[in-house]
Image 1: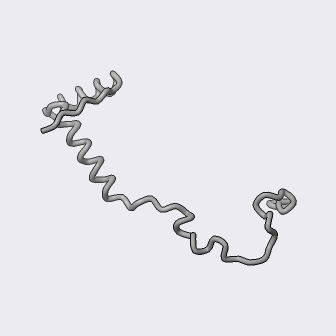
Image 2: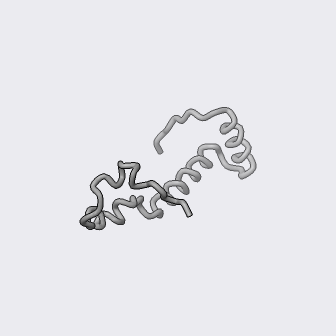
Image 3: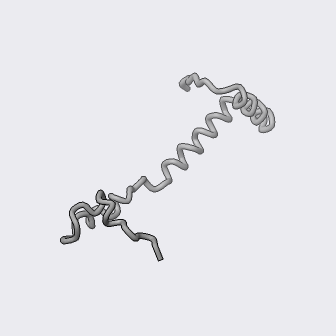
Length: 82
């Protein structure tokens, strides 16, 4: 088995010591268990997909309209008013 040194704040060390005593396992065993659980959950999550990735085929598909729509405040006059 390999060794890994990790620096943790005192409050986390106290919580780890309390949990290991409560579960009757070593701190190392508890950290291994927590790390295995975290990594398994991380693998099972769907990969991040940005909005651009999902709608990338729509980017630039419209023709016409003002070229400065996103930058010209004139186009926002009256926006949101009832």
